[in-house]
Length: 303
Image (cartoon, rainbow, N blue to C red; front, side, top):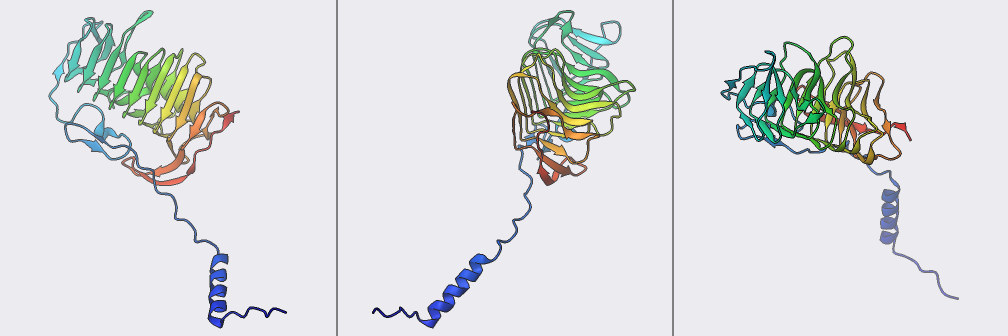
C-alpha cells in the first residue's frame, strides 16, 4: 500500500491563503471616465477641447467685417454669380445663395442662409460664420436646404438650426442654440423631403431654453437615404434623438445626450435597423464640457 503524500505545513498554509484570496469579491471598477472627443482649434487661436461651443464657432473674434447692402426687397442680399466668395462680410438680413459653388467664411449673417430659388437650389459651403442674432427668434431654419457643407458655424436666434431638403448635406463642428415662438416646432436639425447622404458629425445642439419644440435631432423623413449622426452633444427636446425611416444606412453612434434634459424621453427612434452604438447619457458644465457619464443611451422606439 502506497503511503499518503504529506505536504509541508508551509505549503498548506500558502494554499489556504491563495484560495481565500481567489474567493474574495473583485474590487468595484471605478466609474467610467468621459470619452475624449476631438478638439477644435482655429487659426485665430480660439479653441474647444471637447464639443463645439460659441468659443470655437462662428465668426472669428475681432475680425473686421465689410457691411453688405441689402439688394432684395431691403431684407436680403442675393448672390447670383457662380464661385462667389464672401469672406469677412456682415449681411444685416438674409443671405440668398442663387448660384453654384458659393463660399461663405469668417462672416456674420443676421438672418437665414437659404439656397433655394423656386424649384432650383445651389451648392455652397459655409465656414467660421455666425448665423442669426440674439435679439430675435427667426422662424425659418438658420441654414438650408441641400447641397451644402457647414463647418464651425454658430447658429443662434432661430427656432430651427439646419434644414435638410435634398442631397449632400454635411455639418461638422458647429454649435446651435435654439429659441422658439408660439406655434413653432423647434429642431436642431430636421429632414423635410430629405435626400441622400447626410452627415451630422461632432456638433452641439442646445434646445433647453426653447419652449415650442420637437427635438435637437429630428430625422424621420421617409425620403432620406444614408443618414449618419455621430459624436454630437445634444440637450432638450420632447424626445431628444429621433432617427428613423431612412433608406440605406442609418447610423447613430458615439453621441452624448445631457441627462434629464428632455420632456418625454431621451429617444424615439427606429432601433431594429439602426446602427446604434456608443451613445451615452452625460452631465456637462456651463461650458459644455462633459463632466460625467451617467450610463449608456439605449435605443427606444420602433423595433
